[in-house]
Amino acid sequence: MLEIKDLYCGYQGKDIIKGISLEAHRGEFLCIVGPNGCGKTTLLRAVSRIIPSRGVLSLDGRDLAALPRRDLARTIALLGQASELYFPYTVYDTAALGRYAHAAGLFTGLSARDRAIIDDSLMRLDLYGERDRLITELSGGQLQRVFLARTLVQDPEIILLDEPTNHLDLKHQTALLRYVSRWAKDNRKMAVGILHDLNLARYFAGRVALMNEGKIITCGSPAEALGPEILRETFGLDVGAFMRESLKKWKAPGPEGAARISQ
Image 1: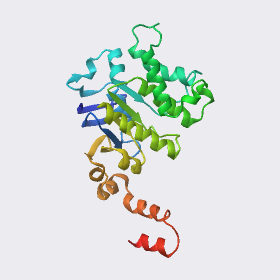
Image 2: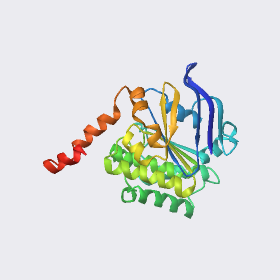
Image 3: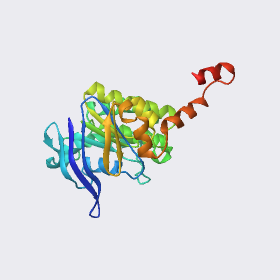
Image 4: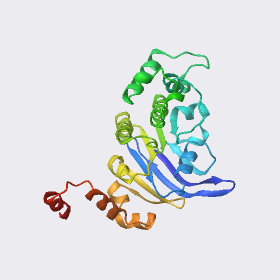
């Protein structure tokens, strides 16, 4: 279990995260949702120790703050929002960077097991055919999948995903989230992801944590955490009504479609 207890953190002496307590369990995909600027990315940056924090961060009773950097890299992997700053490596070499935390030494080559893990991740993310291309030649969606492959190749206990579906089309959004959810369940590991699309969170998450103004408002099953009243209070919008109106536009036209809508 990942335990976050009474966590505070922020920037330039100002707390963005204000006393958050949250748990993630092995085998689950926990999604974090909330308005822009509520502190979701800051929370993940604190858990991955990119920024300092106050409070408890532990995994299975181990203090994450006490882990050496090499051990931390074997424990937590963070897939951040796509950056424009990257080197012109091939797809394969970029994914392979995830194995360096497991290497015996700085100049140790990839083992047969390393290559098998890399190949498997590239195939599952529909990238194996692109393995020799430079990542500078890829679209934003392809590049995001390469960075996810690198994250999975790291083989951590916890994957933190900051809006992982950015730049992806609908097919690859659902494929990515389905794969992450299955990865956590099959390997008894944890995935914690920030999503803006409430439909995707409701469909793929085992549990949802709803944040606002640096705090956890509620956490539970998607049906519990994404109830109509709490969403209206948090987002200032009747989300359920909007979703229902949107769904109507997908209904077939004509009397039969109208009958289904009225039901």
